[in-house]
Image (cartoon, rainbow, N blue to C red; front, side, top):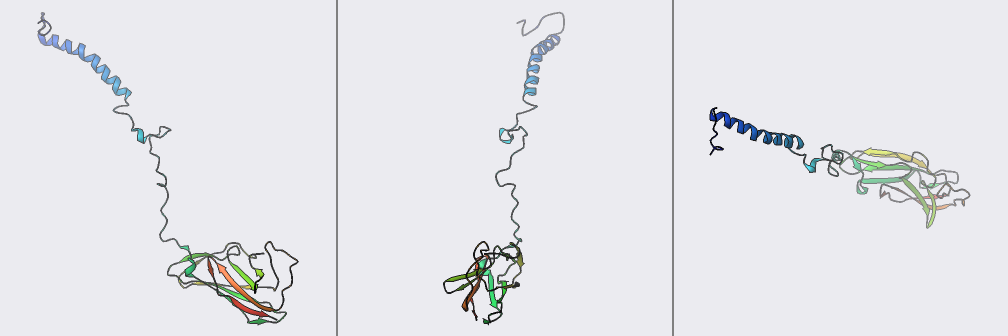
Length: 201
Protein backbone atom coordinates (compact mmCIF):
# COMPACT_ATOMS: atom_id res chain seq x y z
CA UNK A 1 0.00 0.00 0.00
CA UNK A 2 2.97 2.34 0.55
CA UNK A 3 3.74 2.19 -3.14
CA UNK A 4 0.26 3.29 -4.13
CA UNK A 5 -0.11 5.74 -1.25
CA UNK A 6 3.21 7.27 -0.41
CA UNK A 7 3.59 8.10 3.25
CA UNK A 8 5.75 10.74 4.73
CA UNK A 9 5.73 14.17 6.27
CA UNK A 10 5.25 15.86 2.81
CA UNK A 11 2.02 16.03 0.83
CA UNK A 12 1.38 12.99 -1.41
CA UNK A 13 1.54 15.07 -4.67
CA UNK A 14 5.20 15.76 -3.91
CA UNK A 15 5.97 12.06 -3.83
CA UNK A 16 3.98 11.43 -7.02
CA UNK A 17 5.88 14.18 -8.80
CA UNK A 18 9.19 12.63 -7.76
CA UNK A 19 8.09 9.24 -9.07
CA UNK A 20 7.06 10.73 -12.45
CA UNK A 21 10.43 12.46 -12.75
CA UNK A 22 12.37 9.31 -11.86
CA UNK A 23 10.38 7.11 -14.21
CA UNK A 24 9.81 9.60 -17.02
CA UNK A 25 13.33 10.99 -17.39
CA UNK A 26 14.87 7.75 -18.79
CA UNK A 27 11.91 7.38 -21.15
CA UNK A 28 12.38 10.93 -22.38
CA UNK A 29 16.09 10.25 -23.02
CA UNK A 30 15.21 7.16 -25.07
CA UNK A 31 12.71 9.15 -27.17
CA UNK A 32 15.28 11.90 -27.86
CA UNK A 33 17.96 9.39 -28.90
CA UNK A 34 15.59 7.54 -31.25
CA UNK A 35 14.42 10.84 -32.75
CA UNK A 36 18.03 11.91 -33.40
CA UNK A 37 18.98 8.58 -34.98
CA UNK A 38 16.02 8.59 -37.34
CA UNK A 39 16.93 11.98 -38.71
CA UNK A 40 14.21 14.05 -37.11
CA UNK A 41 11.17 12.11 -37.97
CA UNK A 42 11.98 9.38 -40.53
CA UNK A 43 14.40 7.86 -43.00
CA UNK A 44 14.55 8.90 -46.65
CA UNK A 45 12.46 6.85 -49.01
CA UNK A 46 14.82 4.26 -50.50
CA UNK A 47 13.17 4.74 -53.88
CA UNK A 48 14.12 8.44 -53.85
CA UNK A 49 17.78 8.02 -52.92
CA UNK A 50 20.43 7.81 -55.62
CA UNK A 51 23.64 5.85 -55.29
CA UNK A 52 25.39 9.10 -54.37
CA UNK A 53 22.91 9.74 -51.57
CA UNK A 54 21.67 12.94 -53.13
CA UNK A 55 18.05 12.00 -52.58
CA UNK A 56 17.06 13.21 -56.05
CA UNK A 57 15.23 10.83 -58.32
CA UNK A 58 17.01 9.90 -61.51
CA UNK A 59 14.90 10.47 -64.61
CA UNK A 60 13.38 7.49 -66.35
CA UNK A 61 15.01 6.68 -69.68
CA UNK A 62 13.75 9.16 -72.24
CA UNK A 63 12.17 11.46 -69.65
CA UNK A 64 14.56 14.25 -70.55
CA UNK A 65 14.19 13.92 -74.28
CA UNK A 66 12.67 17.03 -75.77
CA UNK A 67 9.58 16.29 -77.83
CA UNK A 68 10.02 16.70 -81.55
CA UNK A 69 8.79 20.00 -82.84
CA UNK A 70 5.66 19.15 -84.84
CA UNK A 71 6.26 22.30 -86.91
CA UNK A 72 9.83 21.39 -87.94
CA UNK A 73 10.16 20.50 -91.65
CA UNK A 74 10.75 16.84 -92.45
CA UNK A 75 12.66 15.26 -95.32
CA UNK A 76 10.81 15.31 -98.61
CA UNK A 77 9.01 12.03 -99.24
CA UNK A 78 9.88 10.53 -102.64
CA UNK A 79 6.24 10.78 -103.73
CA UNK A 80 6.23 14.51 -102.92
CA UNK A 81 9.41 15.24 -104.87
CA UNK A 82 9.21 15.76 -108.65
CA UNK A 83 12.56 15.53 -110.47
CA UNK A 84 13.05 16.79 -114.01
CA UNK A 85 16.14 16.49 -116.18
CA UNK A 86 16.00 18.41 -119.46
CA UNK A 87 18.71 18.51 -122.14
CA UNK A 88 19.20 21.81 -123.96
CA UNK A 89 19.07 20.01 -127.31
CA UNK A 90 17.83 16.78 -128.82
CA UNK A 91 21.12 16.24 -130.67
CA UNK A 92 24.66 17.55 -130.43
CA UNK A 93 27.32 18.13 -133.05
CA UNK A 94 30.77 16.67 -132.47
CA UNK A 95 32.07 19.73 -130.60
CA UNK A 96 28.89 20.58 -128.66
CA UNK A 97 28.69 20.05 -124.89
CA UNK A 98 25.32 18.80 -123.57
CA UNK A 99 23.85 20.95 -120.82
CA UNK A 100 21.14 19.60 -118.52
CA UNK A 101 18.67 21.63 -116.49
CA UNK A 102 18.05 19.95 -113.14
CA UNK A 103 14.76 20.73 -111.38
CA UNK A 104 13.65 19.52 -107.93
CA UNK A 105 10.07 20.47 -107.05
CA UNK A 106 8.01 19.94 -103.91
CA UNK A 107 4.61 18.68 -105.01
CA UNK A 108 3.44 18.02 -101.45
CA UNK A 109 1.30 20.16 -99.17
CA UNK A 110 3.93 20.98 -96.50
CA UNK A 111 7.49 22.32 -96.39
CA UNK A 112 10.15 19.64 -96.71
CA UNK A 113 13.94 19.27 -96.83
CA UNK A 114 15.96 17.68 -99.60
CA UNK A 115 19.72 17.29 -100.04
CA UNK A 116 20.71 18.34 -103.56
CA UNK A 117 24.45 18.13 -102.95
CA UNK A 118 26.83 16.11 -105.11
CA UNK A 119 26.90 13.38 -102.47
CA UNK A 120 23.17 12.64 -102.88
CA UNK A 121 22.00 13.89 -106.26
CA UNK A 122 23.09 11.85 -109.29
CA UNK A 123 22.89 12.25 -113.04
CA UNK A 124 23.65 9.00 -114.82
CA UNK A 125 24.14 8.59 -118.58
CA UNK A 126 23.93 5.27 -120.38
CA UNK A 127 23.92 4.07 -123.96
CA UNK A 128 21.95 0.85 -124.12
CA UNK A 129 23.56 -1.43 -121.50
CA UNK A 130 26.78 0.60 -121.49
CA UNK A 131 27.22 2.78 -118.39
CA UNK A 132 28.87 5.95 -119.68
CA UNK A 133 29.00 8.59 -116.97
CA UNK A 134 27.79 9.45 -113.44
CA UNK A 135 28.01 12.79 -111.66
CA UNK A 136 28.93 10.91 -108.48
CA UNK A 137 32.01 9.17 -109.89
CA UNK A 138 34.08 12.33 -109.62
CA UNK A 139 31.74 14.84 -107.90
CA UNK A 140 32.09 18.58 -108.25
CA UNK A 141 30.63 21.09 -105.84
CA UNK A 142 29.54 20.69 -102.25
CA UNK A 143 28.76 17.17 -101.10
CA UNK A 144 25.78 18.52 -99.13
CA UNK A 145 23.31 21.20 -100.19
CA UNK A 146 20.18 21.20 -98.05
CA UNK A 147 17.13 22.81 -99.59
CA UNK A 148 13.92 23.81 -97.80
CA UNK A 149 11.16 23.68 -100.37
CA UNK A 150 7.69 24.99 -99.68
CA UNK A 151 4.64 23.49 -101.40
CA UNK A 152 4.95 24.17 -105.11
CA UNK A 153 8.49 25.53 -104.82
CA UNK A 154 11.39 24.23 -106.92
CA UNK A 155 15.16 24.48 -107.20
CA UNK A 156 16.76 24.77 -110.65
CA UNK A 157 20.44 24.26 -111.52
CA UNK A 158 22.42 23.35 -114.62
CA UNK A 159 25.00 20.63 -115.15
CA UNK A 160 27.26 20.10 -118.17
CA UNK A 161 28.57 16.79 -119.44
CA UNK A 162 31.91 17.08 -121.22
CA UNK A 163 31.31 13.96 -123.34
CA UNK A 164 33.72 11.74 -121.42
CA UNK A 165 33.33 8.44 -119.63
CA UNK A 166 33.67 8.20 -115.87
CA UNK A 167 34.29 5.55 -113.25
CA UNK A 168 34.22 5.63 -109.47
CA UNK A 169 37.20 7.41 -107.96
CA UNK A 170 37.86 9.77 -110.90
CA UNK A 171 39.50 7.03 -112.98
CA UNK A 172 41.34 8.11 -116.13
CA UNK A 173 42.31 6.44 -119.39
CA UNK A 174 38.75 5.33 -120.18
CA UNK A 175 37.50 4.66 -123.73
CA UNK A 176 36.26 7.64 -125.73
CA UNK A 177 32.56 8.32 -126.08
CA UNK A 178 31.22 7.50 -129.54
CA UNK A 179 28.40 8.99 -131.52
CA UNK A 180 25.01 7.44 -130.90
CA UNK A 181 21.89 7.63 -128.78
CA UNK A 182 22.17 8.26 -125.05
CA UNK A 183 19.82 8.43 -122.08
CA UNK A 184 20.27 10.54 -118.92
CA UNK A 185 18.38 10.09 -115.64
CA UNK A 186 18.32 12.19 -112.47
CA UNK A 187 17.91 10.60 -109.01
CA UNK A 188 17.79 12.18 -105.54
CA UNK A 189 16.21 11.39 -102.16
CA UNK A 190 14.61 8.18 -103.41
CA UNK A 191 12.93 9.85 -106.40
CA UNK A 192 13.87 9.67 -110.08
CA UNK A 193 13.19 11.67 -113.24
CA UNK A 194 11.98 10.36 -116.56
CA UNK A 195 14.89 9.42 -118.87
CA UNK A 196 16.11 12.22 -121.15
CA UNK A 197 17.10 10.83 -124.54
CA UNK A 198 19.54 12.69 -126.82
CA UNK A 199 21.89 12.01 -129.71
CA UNK A 200 25.62 12.67 -130.07
CA UNK A 201 26.89 13.16 -133.63
